[in-house]
Length: 579
Image 1 (cartoon, one colour):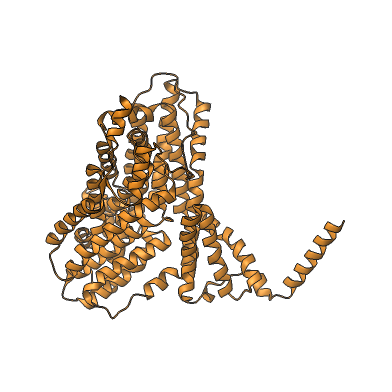
Image 2 (cartoon, rainbow, N blue to C red):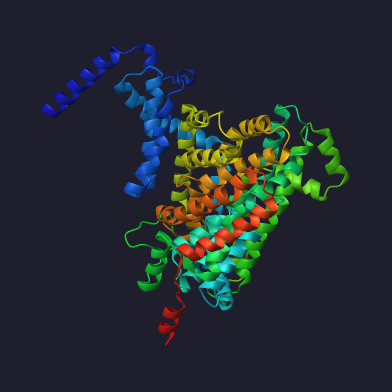
């Protein structure tokens, strides 16, 4: 009775407090126009999320608190008091999550991740994953060949960074485990060959967006250019992309590591701990069982995975072609109708396609093929196959949660104007030779803080090209270099960020703890970024030919590996165990 009376009194008190508050605040209507430039306060959400992620090693909690801090700030800017700011800030989190999930692109990515999780489970259950791992293991005679094969697979799946992260990891994980490679190293190789190669590939899901940004930025200064031609000219200036791909190759063939990655490799070699003790995996396929009742075949894996890749290409073409034909660009429509399979047509339709929908459709078709093969070969019946597929989706459910929270945090920062504030820090009164470097660094900071390279490119490209043109109107290469700095700086920040979707997917594909992956990868990303600036953008901005700058930068990458790195070979340990 006393407890009930206390609760009743508490309700009365709270009711009295709420009755004294303004009606417009009680409605919890957050007017974005009220959120003016709040300066450094806009940086609080990403700072909280990133710092807490490293301190608590709990990504979900860190992202949630980052979002919460942002919603409270928005409520405060809208005129709410502290109590209502906390209350409605909490309820607003649900709105941001629902908004993120209702976005067609985000929903497609979630469905794609879940479908590929089910596909992986089916392939594993039929023994196909084991067979392909054993086949690759025969060619992977040691840690060097294992990493080179992983690197090569990453380059082959150049058309989309998400597909890269989700395909290469599950294929190579059993092989790398056998070679005593740490999961952190595998995640790094996957992550470093995802966005870096997709961003500079001649045909990929990135092309349309990047070319469109370049075209719009040039039109804003009254210049009509061949945007794709400009894109091609930026490739030699995409120093971080190129140097990172080389860095992975050099460290793979020399087995030289430094920093946290060296410790991770030594741990895997000496203690046989592929994952750091005490690290909680954000995702795992450990629950997947091999239920095959007959003889397994490598084709149980190759056919579904090959179908995934083949139907992805078909989907990119048909989806992009439909989008263009339903559009209003008559010149582009004529090109597609006149030469439906020309390079120009392929470039345009790939860029216009919706990768999230296409990859989900391809993963669904590949899953059906894997299911039918398993049933026909007698590995399981249809009902059991469906159960396996659903259980495979469950293992990646936590990845979907992390992605939703990361997108929601990005939405909060968009409403706060975090990226706009960071851009405002760019000074107009700087030496011209520093502009590409500053653009690169600013792109990295924005991308690291927001976890999105696309958003960063969209913010900076309209600023970079007009600013570079104003500083060097007589030098078109300077403008091209600055455009390249936007694109590659965004990828550097995204590559290093713990709240980036590609970082999350790469750690998931490798079976690595997300924060361990970020901690070991970050020093490598910083070293390559520093070389990109010192041996790339600064000399290029002084007028040194990129044909000379790029080879010198490549030499600097090799030199850094030998200067900082020490060999961590697991071959001797493996031989001792075999004896």
